[in-house]
Each structure stands twice: as structure tokens, then as C-alpha cells.
Length: 250
Image 1: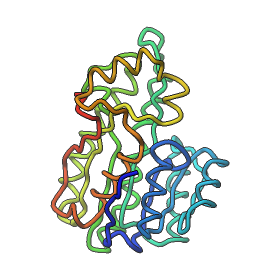
Image 2: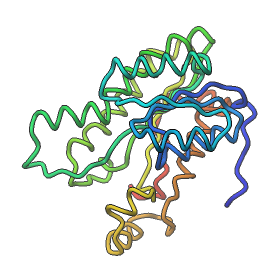
Image 3: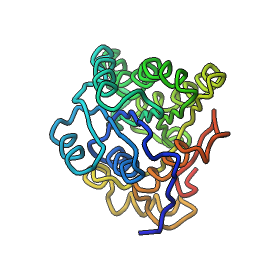
Image 4: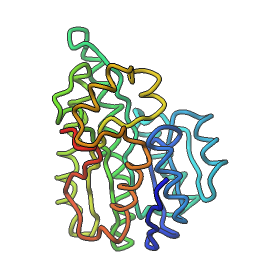
């Protein structure tokens, strides 16, 4: 493992996050904990969330279905009562379930928006006043290179992820006067356990390697490192932009 950077400005900071029980989210939780931050996350996976809280000092969680905005708000309030108001918000939670465009119903489309987009805005709405009161903060929204690549097989997911960039840009403008920075991270195909189990066949991996500029598959740790940078004071003048972690695949 590389000798990664330490960010003194993250020590003692309060991080609120959606999705932290597995995959990229779990790597982000571990990375912030290693920096000495206080981390509270929301996740629907009760068992996985508890395992993360047990494994890392300074980490707590609430079990929450993010499609339920009232539950999202209650979960963030519960985390705030335990670790304090947020300095940092990481909008990470999403699901890239495959679906055929011919079979998508209005109900499924709406559910995909609720799963992959809607909760991001309402999490921002909930925590931004506390950030403003503390003199600023950092919000990181998780995008995807799926739509940049014109990837097929999940039109509702790709649409939601494309919309994340619009959300980032408009909220960066609205919150910039409060010194709240808003950015998007654009992961490529990240080798989480979910991806390996469901879609990372030898043929698919070979084709993807050929598309990337770099030959190595992308470990979730590299997304987490970009999150830390954007959350830290090192990125104090970075806002309203996209930060790619995709090995040059676009």
C-alpha cells in the first residue's frame, strides 16, 4: 500500500456521510477515522454498519432508508446529537442496478431517483446551516463516469448521476458565500466486492483495461484519498468542479 498523505486539518472534524457500510463508502469511513475525524454515517445495512462502527474509533451510524427523507433528517439529527454539527458532508450512497430501458416503469424511475439523487439535496439542505454557522465546510457528492462514457444498461442510474453534477454546480454557487465548498468526485469502474461479484467478468475487465489509460484496476482506496483531499483545508479554493478517479477511461 502506498505511503498516503496525512491531513492535519481533518483531525477532530465532524463528518456526516451517506452509505458507509460497504464498498467505496466503507473505505471512506476508514480513511476519515484514520485521520482522527469523528464520522457519522447513514446506511440501510444494519449489520454492515455496526461492523464498521465497531471496527473504527470515532465512528458511529444510524440505520436509515435514504429514500425516506423524514428518516434521513432524523438520522442526521441523531448523528449530530452524538458527534456534533457537520464540518463535512459526503453524499456517497447509490446503487448502480442494471435495468433494460424497455422495462422501466414510472414507479421504478422515481425509485431510482430517490435512491441515487434526491437524498443528496436534502442532506445538503439539512447540514448546510450548521456549516454556515461554523464558518464554512466541504460537501462532496459522488458522481460516476458511466454517463461520461455513454455507458448503457442503466438509464435511470446514469441520468441520476449526470444530475449530480448540476446539483454540485448550483449548490456551490448558492453556498459559496458561506465558504461552503461543493465538489463532485467521478469514480471510474471501482473494484468493490459488489462489482467483482456481479459484473467483473474476465471479458468485461479486459475490455475496460483497454479503455483506461492506466493498466491497473482501481481500488476503492483511491476514491477515498480524493475525498480526503477535497474535505481538507488543502482544497480550500476548490469548488464547483469534478475530480476524476477513473484511470483515464473517459
